[in-house]
Amino acid sequence: MIRYIRWCAWFCALLLVALLVNAARVQLVESEALAANPANKRAVIARYAQPRGPILVDGRPVTGTRDSGQLLRYERTYTNGPLYAPVTGFSSQTYGTSFVERAEDAVLAGTDPRLAVLPLWNDLARSRPDGGRVATTIRAKLQLAAYTGLAGKRGAVAAVEPATGRILALVSSPSYDPGVLSGTGPHVKAAWDRLNSDPTRPMLNRALRETYPPGSTFKIVTAAAALDAGVVTDVDAPTTTPDPYPLPGTHTLLPNAATGCEDASMAEAVRWSCNTVMAKIGVQVGLRRMVAAAERFGFNDAGLRVPSWVSRSDFDTDMSQDQLALSSIGQFNTKATPLQMAMVAAAVANGGEIKTPYLVDGTSQADGDPVRRGSPHSLGRAMNPATALRLQELMVAVVEDGTGRNAAIRGAVVGGKTGTAQHGVGNTGTPYAWFIAWAKGKRAAVPEVAVAVVVEDAAANRGDISGNSAAAPIARSVMQAALSAP
Image 1 (tube, rainbow, N blue to C red):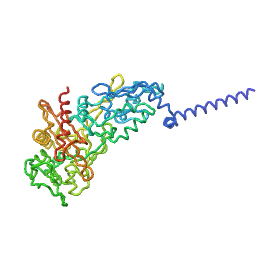
Image 2 (cartoon, rainbow, N blue to C red):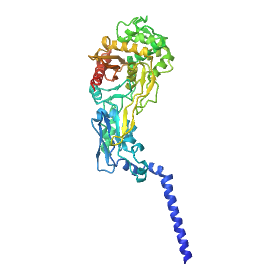
Image 3 (cartoon, helix red, strand yellow):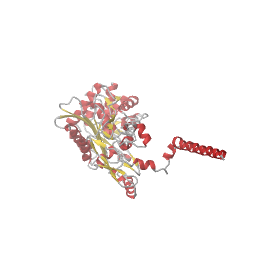
Image 4 (cartoon, rainbow, N blue to C red):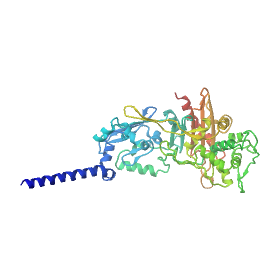
C-alpha cells in the first residue's frame, strides 16, 4: 500500500514539474508571440485602461482623454484639433497613431521604462506608471497666425528658430479634427473614409510630407553656391545675360516675369527674381557643385526626423545643362517640403550653419519630473559665413525694395525671397505661391525666426509675383507674432 502511495506521490510531483515547465515555457518562450497574436485582446485593453498623457504647447495641454465606459476605456480628445493636427497627429483605438502621438507613444502611454521609479516592481506587479507629458517647441501665437493666414486655402507654413532648430509653427491647410478618429465603431470608420476620400486631402501634412517645386525661392541656394564657388565675386557686377536666355543645347528660350533683367547683376536678379540670370549662374556653377550645395542645405536627405519622418527634398544628381538651368531656379525635378525651405532661410539667418529642426522640447513624468530634454544639434554648414552675410543683404533688399515688400515689418529687419512655381502639364496649373523669410527685432543680436509659406491655390495673374501677394502677408503675420512674443 505504501509503495502505491509513493508511486502516486512521484507521479503527482512529475505532473507538478511538467506544469511548472509549461508555465515557464509560456511565460518566457512564447510570451511575445502570444502578446502579438491578434486574438489576444488583453494588451489592447490594458493600453487604453488608463488616461494617455498630454501633449503640451506653451506649457498647456492641447490633448486630453475621456472615459468612454467601453471595453477600450479611455479615448483621446483634442483642444483646437484642426489647429494642432499637423503637430499632434491622431491617436485612435481603430487606426493607431501618427506624428507626435506615434513618435512619443511610449511616453504618452506610460510604457517607457524611464517613466517608472521602480521598473522591476512594475514588471512584477504588471502595472505601469501614468502616461507622461510631451512638451512641444510650438508657440501658440505663431501657430495661430499661420493657421489664420492660410484661412483654409491649400498650403502650409513652417517656422523655425534659426539658432536652435526649434520648430515654432507647423501648419497644414485644410486640416481636420483628430478627435473624430478616437474610439471605435461605425462613426469612426465613416470619419476615416470621409477624410481619406476628400479631394483636398486634409490628413496630408503638407508642411512635412508634401514636396513642391520651390520656384524662385531656390535661387537663394543657387546664389550661395555661386558665391562659395567663386563663380560670382561681385554681386553688383553685370552678368551679360540675354533676355530671354537660350537654354544650353536647346532652341528653348527662358523668359522672365520681371522686367529689366537683361545683363542684370546677381543682386538685381535676387531682388527682382530674374530667371535668366540665376539659370545662367547655375550652369556656370556646374552640376557637381550645385548638387553639393543643395545637399549642404538638406536636399537629398531621406533621414530627417523631427521626430516624425520628413519627406525627402530632391535635387537631381544627373542632369543635362538645360535641365540644370531650370533646376537652378527651382523648376524641372527640384522638389522641397516647406520645412526644407524654412531651413534654407534659417541657414542664411544663422550665418550659414543649419541646425537640425526638432519638434519635441522635452518629455516628463506625469508629475513633471523631466525624462528627456530636446537640445540643438548642427546639421552642418550650408555656406561660408561671408556668403551668408551677403545673402542676408540681398534678402533684405527683396523686402525693402524688391518683390517681397508685403513682408516688411516696421521696426524690424526682414529678409525674404518670393517664389512662383510652375507645375502641371505644360505648366497649365495655377502657380504655387512661395515666400521664405527671416526676421529680427532692431535690438536683437541675431534673427529670431525663419519661415516658409506655400499656397497651392493662390489667386494671382501669371504675370504677377504671387509669392508677394499670397504668401508674403502670411509670413509677415507669423514673424510679427514671433517678434512680439515674450
